[in-house]
Image (tube, rainbow, N blue to C red; front, side, top):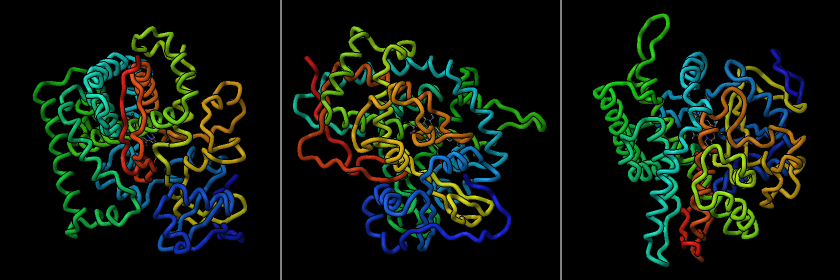
Length: 451
Ligand code: HEM
């Protein structure tokens, strides 16, 4: 376990290579490279270079960091400063007392009773997608990343903000392409200096203006039409500070809306793509899942049906183990720390990698194998809960965990029995670690109705 200490500890620095040693490999696939560091050097690794990164891969250390948020372990880091260029001070990038206030305010809107009632909307959007897929000409390749991004955006837009921004679902996919880059890439770094006229900065500025227009139109439209639909947007607009009686500033409302719009759809869309991909590679798993889904007799599943579909949940869990949509989480410590007998200085960059924890050989047998049965109650019993953290954990765990698990399962329950989705032969499917862990060249698929 780690302990916070005041004085300099007479302990060694964790082992690890120099930054430059791994620079090329990191560039090819940061997640895979950082996982290799863990296999080569152990559970606490120091990667020195222009930025020194401490990698923590012991689930006890991870628990320590994630359960103690501000003021012990904070988000006062370069990565979140980059994300702030897009998200402002929304829930993902906020910290300290401001974050506590905003989280307390928004948490009730994600109560499972409210979220479970989203099933009708989710099934409605999926039914429209079914209609569209049924009209597809035979043999026409489809960009699955766009299909999934569009439907998950429609779901967030409709359930959290009313239906007003549905029309922008297409545009959002393009906006995201510019925003969703690796926070440590040169392009992302340059956004911290918006006056530099790099091609990415110019594109970024255009996209941000478009995004702001969409969001401020949404906010102004709701103010004009009157608050009363009781969705999250209403709550953000009507809340009053208990002491001052003042409402939330316009910019803070914008930041929360943008955060939920972006954090709340691209992650689920990425998860869905990888699930389709893994099922196409494992027909025996797909067959077992289809036979479970037969209990629905061709009807969409409601939130109440999910307890009858345990294998569906296991498939989703196992897919997110192999391809966690959020592959890395970063924190910094306000104090010097000791982890596993090594000294970590105050202010250090701590990297926690769901990607790596999900492959930890002490906790997973044959980690490379796609095996949804490993999430059966029997085989899950006794597993360390911090070696599986697709939604992070602790006070700053994902606020949308219930919502995304619901939508992913309901979308699959309706699409899978109707369509056979398989990658276009020859299309290269390789992961790319941007903010999300998504297919580098997208996912071109053939979609055929099942007979
Ligand atoms: C498969 C889907 C999803 C995955 C894998 C995922 C994963 C995560 C992870 C790992 C974090 C922690 C990030 C960090 O500490 O840096 C997080 C935070 C967050 N997520 Fe999600 N997420 C998903 C879906 C959603 C949805 C549907 C929403 C909302 C509609 C959402 C909203 C948020 C917000 C607001 C935070 C910040 C929470 C806080 O710090 O208080 N996410 N998510």
